[in-house]
Image (cartoon, rainbow, N blue to C red; front, side, top):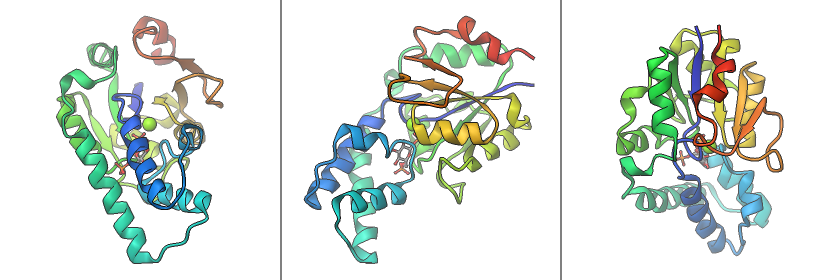
Length: 216
Ligand code: B16
Ligand code: MG
């Protein structure tokens, strides 16, 4: 049996831009300008690890209380930015791809670093497509550690080598490869590496073009 494991932010919905906006604002309060290039290294990375990286880049040090309050502030800002998300915000081609996978009886799982993943899936009204959901609340080790995808495979009852992962982040691709899964990158090989295949979006590569990865 084959399974598809989806990352959330940047693959199913364009929330990556909202994470960036919220982190850029936190970085600004630390006197640091977070570039889009640096932000690539935050994609797929957990909330606290992301703040650790920003602190490292900015050279700022904060005590534990401030660290926790910055995490809360970032999440409040992020939640305000995603408040108006709805079904129309799933990225182009995602819904029909999920429908095709379901029609082909391929198991569908979510493997996201986000603790807000369930909330976003509910807003998009696509929760029912997922046979298993593993998110930032369920793992001890964030991407690039393979835990999130290995737990997803286990929950679906599918061997890791039969799983196809869709990811937009380097941390996530590395996690999938380390889990011995097929990694399909949503993005360009100029920015991402280590994936089996690179596609710009689900519109240009519908199921027919990805079918070889789901063959038994
Ligand atoms: P939260 P993904 C990741 O989600 C994002 O790419 C990353 O930017 C974010 O820091 C992380 O989730 C944690 O998100 O603050 O909502 O718990 O791409 O793995 O779906
Ligand atoms: Mg992502």
